[in-house]
Amino acid sequence: MKKANGDLMVNDKIFISAGDLSGDIHAANVIKEIKNINQNCHVIALGSNNLKCVSDYFIEDIVNINAFGLLSLKQILYFKKLLKKVSSILSIERPSKIILLDYYGFHIHIARLAKKLNIPVFYYISPQVWASRSSRIKKLAETVKKMLVILPFEEALYKQNGVDAVFVGHPLIDKIIQKDSFNKKPFSFLESPLIGLFPGSRKWAIKRHIPILLETAKILKEQINAKFVMFCVNSDINYDLPEYIKLDTSGSFEQRKLIDFAVCPSGTVSLENALMGIPMAIIYKLPYLNYFFFRAIIKVKYITMVNILSSRNVVPEFIQFNATPKKISEYVLNQLKFDNYTTKVQELVSFRKMLGQPGVSKRVAEIILND
Image 1: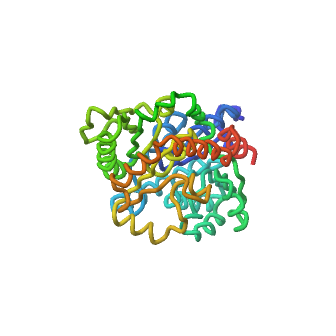
Image 2: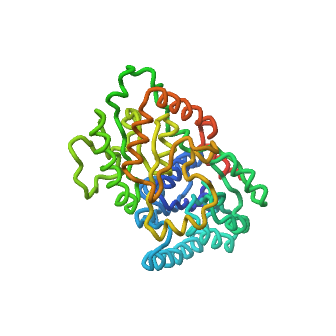
Image 3: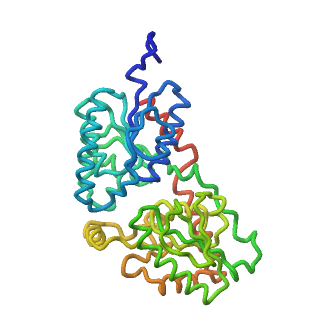
């Protein structure tokens, strides 16, 4: 698929963009599969380290600017400048296809640029239009060739609104091996449980969640012989951890599978824990302006995917003013009773069946290349 002089043909070029850490990981996995199919594919990318490692031309890191919710003036100016840069690159390089992952606020502008240049857009991992701002579906319909959705109900939602969509399965299915059944452990393991503490990946989340996690662990330690591990994406923590809390920055799922219970934010980490059958309590504390903004526009009853897909409160959500160490620790203690614990594990293990079959990244790559 090269010209005689060795120059890349237009059809060998793909532009891809991901704006958060999980999207960057999933995007990189798709690019790996695309390059397995077409080794001549030339990839232009916006994202973070994972995409940087698999792209041929990496523009810049947009993940670590921590843009979320209401943007600062500095962030708004940054994205305006970046969009101008992307516009120039697309006009010069003329990729044959554009892949966007979530991150609607910025990516809708890239989709509009692509529309003007007559470049088809494949949107993998839909913005959560079913949770808030459903008017975005119309804008996506105007600019996107195909939605590659990861939640089963999203396919019908888009098709009902005139958008070509296909359910490809959730990419975490390929990443997670279910946690070994709890009953392989001695019945006494709940007398000294290993509890995982997850502050999140964004800086604002870490700042607000760590004090809650530390105080929750302190209360639990006073009442049961628990052990604790703080799982962070990096070691840049400005808190002194007590000696009974170990720090893990390895990102290893093998280490995650050792924990008996988790206290974590909603989002990717909670879905990962659910797929591994790890009972948990969800915490989420936003900056106040963001909290009141999202509370005004959110239409769904729950914020955690296992609850949304199950249409019930499988795992409790301690949000904003309700995210107190006292309430969280009381729930954890109750959940660590044997009957409650075993029932919850079985609920979470059965949940996995709702998210599709393995081979998601390869399936996505094939659809994009063949469409």
